[in-house]
Image 1 (cartoon, rainbow, N blue to C red):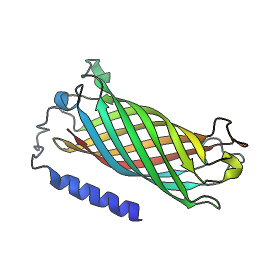
Image 2: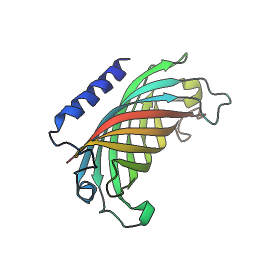
Image 3: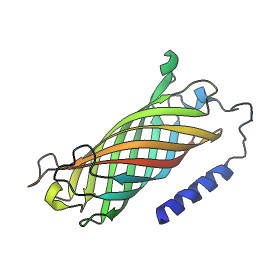
Length: 204
């Protein structure tokens, strides 16, 4: 519950940080300027993850909550591809938090490198995106299925931003996360989790 309280505080601060309003008739921000090559994005939020997911046989329940921090860099300008109009972005992420259910394990922490595609349409307050990631994780989840503390993580996510200010957006995301040691440990059943992430982004 403390993580959710911090998230509510993030949202309240984000709404006050910018003095530039979004007009009722639409946005007065420059989407082509924000989503252009060389621009940066910083995000913070909270994710809640539930496992097992999909492959459930022999896998105990392990649910966890993560604080998530991202820094993104726009790789390209917006491409004019009709409904797929948008640009490419790369992100570095760090995350960590407690295991909240399950008989074994106390924490999950790690980092992920993401490749993201932003769907940017003129005048939209919503900017959907899809992304794929790979990284490394440390966890003491049930060692009878993951074999060791060090794990690799593979992730996929879809989400959307909603701009509340010209350079501030709220984020909602559905995420899949797979943890395994790539057969470097004595056991490698792995963890498959799905979750929901909520956050806030600043663009500069």
